[in-house]
Image (cartoon, rainbow, N blue to C red; front, side, top):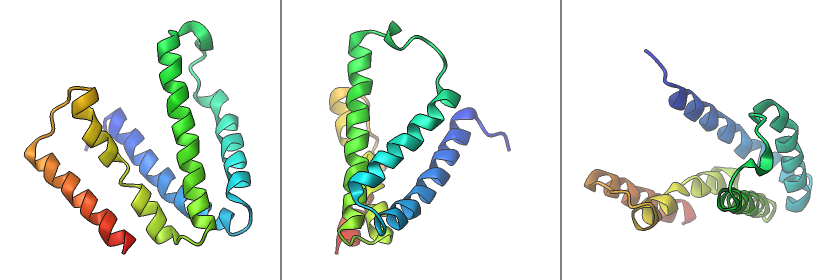
Length: 138
Protein backbone atom coordinates (compact mmCIF):
# COMPACT_ATOMS: atom_id res chain seq x y z
CA UNK A 1 0.00 0.00 0.00
CA UNK A 2 1.38 3.37 -1.04
CA UNK A 3 0.77 6.16 1.47
CA UNK A 4 0.57 9.60 -0.07
CA UNK A 5 2.11 12.54 1.78
CA UNK A 6 -1.28 13.99 2.73
CA UNK A 7 -2.41 10.66 4.19
CA UNK A 8 0.79 10.27 6.23
CA UNK A 9 0.34 13.78 7.64
CA UNK A 10 -3.31 13.00 8.37
CA UNK A 11 -2.37 9.85 10.28
CA UNK A 12 0.29 11.80 12.20
CA UNK A 13 -2.30 14.45 13.11
CA UNK A 14 -4.75 11.76 14.23
CA UNK A 15 -2.15 10.17 16.52
CA UNK A 16 -0.90 13.50 17.88
CA UNK A 17 -4.38 14.85 18.58
CA UNK A 18 -5.29 11.55 20.23
CA UNK A 19 -2.33 11.85 22.60
CA UNK A 20 -3.05 15.56 23.13
CA UNK A 21 -6.52 14.80 24.48
CA UNK A 22 -5.06 12.65 27.22
CA UNK A 23 -2.24 15.07 28.02
CA UNK A 24 -4.68 17.99 28.21
CA UNK A 25 -6.81 16.22 30.77
CA UNK A 26 -3.81 15.13 32.83
CA UNK A 27 -2.34 18.64 32.78
CA UNK A 28 -5.55 20.43 33.73
CA UNK A 29 -5.88 18.15 36.75
CA UNK A 30 -2.69 19.83 37.99
CA UNK A 31 -2.61 23.39 36.61
CA UNK A 32 -5.03 26.07 35.38
CA UNK A 33 -6.28 26.09 31.80
CA UNK A 34 -4.43 29.38 31.26
CA UNK A 35 -1.08 27.97 32.42
CA UNK A 36 -1.61 24.83 30.37
CA UNK A 37 -2.22 27.03 27.31
CA UNK A 38 1.01 28.97 27.95
CA UNK A 39 3.01 25.72 28.02
CA UNK A 40 1.15 24.45 24.96
CA UNK A 41 2.30 27.57 23.11
CA UNK A 42 5.88 27.18 24.41
CA UNK A 43 5.88 23.61 23.09
CA UNK A 44 4.59 24.85 19.76
CA UNK A 45 7.29 27.53 19.55
CA UNK A 46 10.05 25.06 20.38
CA UNK A 47 8.96 22.91 17.44
CA UNK A 48 8.89 25.79 14.93
CA UNK A 49 12.61 25.83 14.00
CA UNK A 50 12.22 22.26 12.76
CA UNK A 51 9.03 22.92 10.77
CA UNK A 52 9.40 26.47 9.41
CA UNK A 53 10.54 26.53 5.76
CA UNK A 54 12.79 29.55 6.32
CA UNK A 55 10.99 32.01 4.05
CA UNK A 56 10.89 35.59 5.36
CA UNK A 57 7.90 36.03 7.66
CA UNK A 58 6.79 39.31 6.12
CA UNK A 59 7.30 38.13 2.53
CA UNK A 60 3.61 37.19 2.38
CA UNK A 61 0.73 39.55 1.65
CA UNK A 62 -0.98 41.31 4.54
CA UNK A 63 -4.21 39.46 3.65
CA UNK A 64 -2.50 36.07 3.97
CA UNK A 65 -0.82 37.07 7.22
CA UNK A 66 -4.15 38.33 8.60
CA UNK A 67 -5.90 35.03 7.75
CA UNK A 68 -3.15 32.93 9.33
CA UNK A 69 -3.08 35.24 12.37
CA UNK A 70 -6.86 34.88 12.75
CA UNK A 71 -6.49 31.10 12.45
CA UNK A 72 -3.85 31.21 15.19
CA UNK A 73 -6.10 33.24 17.47
CA UNK A 74 -8.98 30.81 16.88
CA UNK A 75 -6.64 27.87 17.49
CA UNK A 76 -5.39 29.35 20.77
CA UNK A 77 -8.90 30.22 21.92
CA UNK A 78 -10.16 26.75 21.01
CA UNK A 79 -7.24 25.13 22.83
CA UNK A 80 -7.90 27.25 25.90
CA UNK A 81 -11.61 26.37 25.78
CA UNK A 82 -10.82 22.63 25.70
CA UNK A 83 -8.43 23.03 28.62
CA UNK A 84 -10.98 25.11 30.55
CA UNK A 85 -13.71 22.53 29.88
CA UNK A 86 -11.49 19.80 31.30
CA UNK A 87 -10.41 21.95 34.23
CA UNK A 88 -14.10 22.55 35.04
CA UNK A 89 -14.69 18.81 35.33
CA UNK A 90 -15.31 17.77 31.73
CA UNK A 91 -14.33 14.18 31.03
CA UNK A 92 -11.65 13.72 28.38
CA UNK A 93 -13.75 10.90 26.92
CA UNK A 94 -16.54 13.42 26.25
CA UNK A 95 -14.77 16.76 25.72
CA UNK A 96 -12.23 15.49 23.17
CA UNK A 97 -14.68 13.67 20.86
CA UNK A 98 -17.21 16.47 21.21
CA UNK A 99 -14.69 19.08 20.09
CA UNK A 100 -13.31 16.72 17.46
CA UNK A 101 -16.44 17.18 15.35
CA UNK A 102 -15.36 20.78 14.67
CA UNK A 103 -15.00 20.01 10.94
CA UNK A 104 -18.79 20.25 10.78
CA UNK A 105 -18.33 24.03 11.02
CA UNK A 106 -16.10 23.87 7.93
CA UNK A 107 -18.61 21.62 6.14
CA UNK A 108 -21.39 24.10 6.78
CA UNK A 109 -19.37 27.20 5.82
CA UNK A 110 -17.35 25.81 2.88
CA UNK A 111 -20.24 25.96 0.38
CA UNK A 112 -20.93 29.58 1.31
CA UNK A 113 -17.39 30.92 1.61
CA UNK A 114 -15.31 28.59 -0.57
CA UNK A 115 -18.01 27.64 -3.12
CA UNK A 116 -17.45 23.94 -2.48
CA UNK A 117 -20.14 21.36 -3.15
CA UNK A 118 -21.35 18.92 -0.50
CA UNK A 119 -22.71 15.64 -1.86
CA UNK A 120 -25.71 13.85 -0.39
CA UNK A 121 -23.41 11.27 1.19
CA UNK A 122 -21.33 14.02 2.79
CA UNK A 123 -24.55 15.63 4.00
CA UNK A 124 -25.46 12.36 5.70
CA UNK A 125 -22.02 12.40 7.34
CA UNK A 126 -22.68 15.90 8.66
CA UNK A 127 -26.01 14.76 10.11
CA UNK A 128 -24.23 11.82 11.77
CA UNK A 129 -21.67 14.23 13.25
CA UNK A 130 -24.40 16.50 14.58
CA UNK A 131 -26.12 13.45 16.05
CA UNK A 132 -22.86 12.51 17.75
CA UNK A 133 -22.77 15.93 19.42
CA UNK A 134 -26.20 15.39 20.94
CA UNK A 135 -25.36 11.85 22.04
CA UNK A 136 -22.06 12.89 23.64
CA UNK A 137 -23.59 15.90 25.39
CA UNK A 138 -26.40 13.90 26.98
